[in-house]
Amino acid sequence: MSTQLELPAETVAAESVTDLVEGIARAARSAQRVLARMSSPEKEQALQLAADSLRAAEGDILAANATDMANGAANGLSSAMLDRLKLTPERLAAMADAVAQVAVLTDPVGHVIDESSRPNGMVLQRVRIPVGVIGIIYESRPNVTADAAALCVRSGNATLLRGGSEAVHSNRAIHAALVAGLTQGGVPADAVQLMPTQDRAAVGAMLAAAGLIDMIVPRGGKSLVARVQADARVPVLAHLDGINHTFVHAAADPAMAKAIALNAKMRRTGICGAMETLLIDATYPDPHGLVEPLLDAGCELRGDARACAIDPRILPASDEDWDTEYLEAILSVAVVDGLDAALTHVSTHASGHTDAIVTQDQSVADRFLAEADSAIVMHNASSQFADGGEFGLGAEIGIATGRLHARGPVALEGLTTYKWLVRGTGQVRP
Image (cartoon, rainbow, N blue to C red; front, side, top):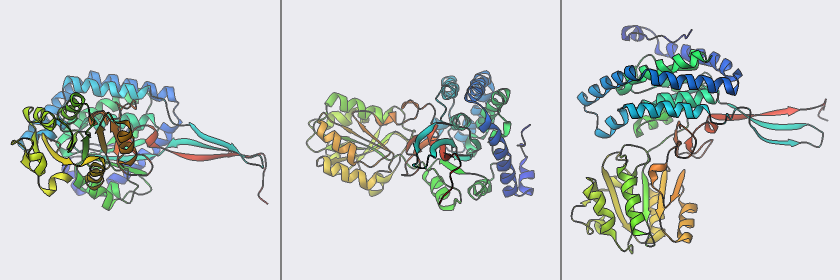
């Protein structure tokens, strides 16, 4: 039976939140040892049962989400935040399908990364193992509850989930359905726990739980990630802003450039892969044909002086615009003098998430791919493809924008570490 309890607010206030978090983390660590012993087929079956349980709980989950949506609208959540929060039958079905897809992915645990023999006859192997207990702190998107749980279970990790208060009812309904399926498949309930309080002190307790929580993954706005990075005593796998650029080079195909720019911004404006800055080469032949579809689609464009000259509907950009993740139908536009100027703008303002170039000149594309220092760099493709599922990784825990451990879409392999196995025949060191 799970040790996690749904504590009423007055009980949480009376007890030490730190003690609460540490108790949950200890239970997770015990459960992780059981999970680590489960075979790959056992974990696969448990995740398939969890996916079935999500589908069966559709009514409960959508009703809970309707409560969150109503509360969010009443509390003035932005349209982008409400879009991230909203669940529909189609989105819920996709969530369940993502869990099922993770179930059949290759299990990284036990994979031999490399093997070598020493002159003295010892055989050395580096083998993938789970990280251990992973704390995930996230905002708004309830699908993260399912994605994170599935990825952690498949990779042998226990997880402690702390979602935002705006999605509290949705997260609880999704978590209940997941645990019902997972426990049916033999996974300990404490392997996937949802923080039973929205008290902000719980986040601080998670960040300070060194030795109990092995890694923290923050998913949310700049202020959340900044707080986690500043306060954590636990290693952090950071997902920063998606200030993503698309550079339309002079040699871009106009029809392709128009389609990519429109899709990169307007397909879904509230996701981290959405384009936030459009860079147009000063010698690109049809800049008006590039911006007009965006304006006609209802996107507000904010540009530099040369961009504003393209269309009178483009508003002047402020200095802050170049460093803003809008997550809504607003786009910064700059006209730049070729590849070097584009790369300079990207290196100055990009967040290290995703940057793209549209061009038919392969040598220019190769330079951009080599010199744009982001986790994902694209050629002739929409930045909306910056997603673990689109990369064939199944669900993702987030897009890591740092340089260590994992980078880009973090899926199963990014949730493992390794250990050395040394096999000898009685060797002693002289």
